[in-house]
Length: 447
Ligand code: SF4
Image (cartoon, rainbow, N blue to C red; front, top):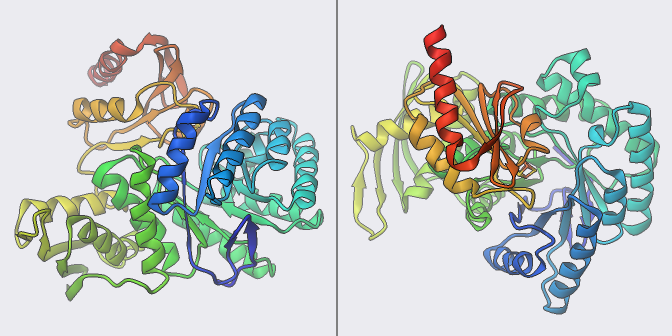
């Protein structure tokens, strides 16, 4: 899909350029030294854009200080301010950094007022040469749109088209759009609908791709690669962020792989493919386990999402960490990876489905450690959707279709949600997983 060029500092998104790799700090932006240190590491790891959370006006000052220091050091990576709810903070941030990410629907409950605030923001962006991302996630769409279209990919597309229309009406075109979801089917469908709608109307704003709240480890990588690669293989997408509940440095190699592969700078290690009805038998000769996992997710994610095949069997080999050959044929690893990809593409639920945010400056506890503990203690709850979210501000809205939610409140307290409803509040952090399990158990017995 041909897209317009969007400029954010020295980086151009769209216009047929390479797929830009970006990530986000998980430090508190007000902790300038920690954020600077993380920005330096992310830049050295290959991040081409770095997003920082800006929850309060005081963080805009920190943002300016961080940007100033990085530029002094010769680090020219564009910074993106992540702003929720406040158009005033977004406007202030647009005067400081190269790009601002907002969900304009949550600026104000009154849609007309939100539109006015959005128009003022686009004026400032135009004046300052700042890029804007309209980031609409599944689960945080707002009542007006969901009443009309439900909480669906169509609603995501319709919401995006409304804000896009306002940008065009206000003669502001330095815009990137994202429609993320943790459910890969929803995410792929939403972006496809938006790409088609824009094309029909002769609009070509670049798209930022991501599977949000993808979790961590193999599952996070497989889910992200399957969703994002499906779209990139269709020419949809100009920049990617792989969200992992891990150190953000770990996101870069995965995003870089996707950028290289769909920029034709890297090829799959698949050496042979045999089809038996709707089953694919795939043979690999991969240079590492991570490459195998990414190649496999990209080679077969789209076919599974689109129901072109029903199962896939992995054969061949990959090189272990010490260079030793690890055979896949008939192995547990082969069956496990196959199950992981089937779950990532929502074709089979062989374990619980986890939704976990990557964490950011709003995170109120050790998210990665807690998430791993929740996974360890709930691994028997096959098919259940469990969310672990870093903050009470965005967490409940973003956990979309979770059955249960563990949401950090701050001050070492946690809220536990049953679907969208908080059922326990202010639970001390060290008791929260026990309480969650008790509730799940109680409900199971009642049924
Ligand atoms: S839900 Fe997670 S990633 Fe989103 S704002 Fe809260 S802490 Fe940050």
